[in-house]
View 1: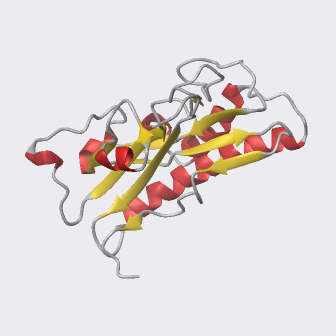
View 2: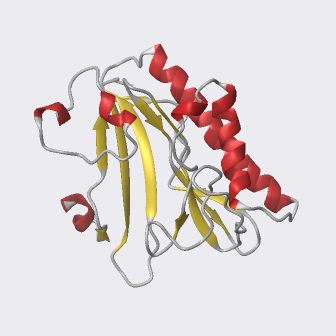
Length: 207
């Protein structure tokens, strides 16, 4: 939180920092007990959201994955690859619809994403919607990317922002990749917050 303030940003809640089995709970709230200490060979999920501390600013909401070691275990890498492919399928769904000037409803984006995870055999481990509207509040009032909790029939509109954040949650660990998508007034689709994460970051790697 001090880091946010030092960079003239604000948020209403500290980030989620979840290690190992805690990362398998999408609603985990970071605590202060010994089981929250990050150690060698831990998988770490970091989900943070903030905005510039000025009127009418818009939130950013991103999740990244890291591993405290020099080489990411194959199991983590394999599950991350499925999540990344699902994320990319959702982004492609949005890009294609706006390139074709075609009406797009929120449930369609969720389904494009969910189909990838189901096909990989992890359907039961994907237990939340694909994304939410983002505005001056981190959960905005626009269309959500949802065909699980609701069948979202609201349109994905120009000049709106939303998250795409598929996840696979297993008893031992969870993997999520979250990006933000902004559709501008011309229908161009922008993925914000830097390049999409393509692999889990080995935090102790030297290069």
